[in-house]
Length: 119
Image (tube, rainbow, N blue to C red; front, side, top):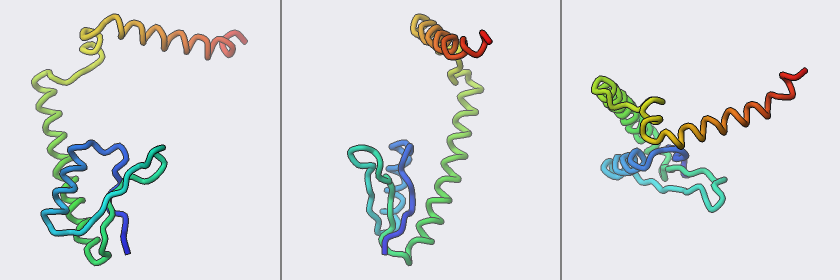
């Protein structure tokens, strides 16, 4: 009987492909389900044989530990180089859009809170 191995909702495409490759390289039989037309189904990777589940789970857990460490190292390296984006960088890239969005946020907050603040 098939068993849920890895939920794919909000998973970046590169990570999903690496998980697929990992399972294929270790000769683990799996299939994938999509979210469907309305996005209400479970997009996931399922392992076909229950006997292979523990091995597949160990491989994915190990992969995710290494991926997390790699992504954190890349972030720290980019942070040291000054390549990470913050609010100031976003403002400098497109100040008109930034100011319009901030104004819209303030307007929505004003109308939302005006009643409560006028009491």
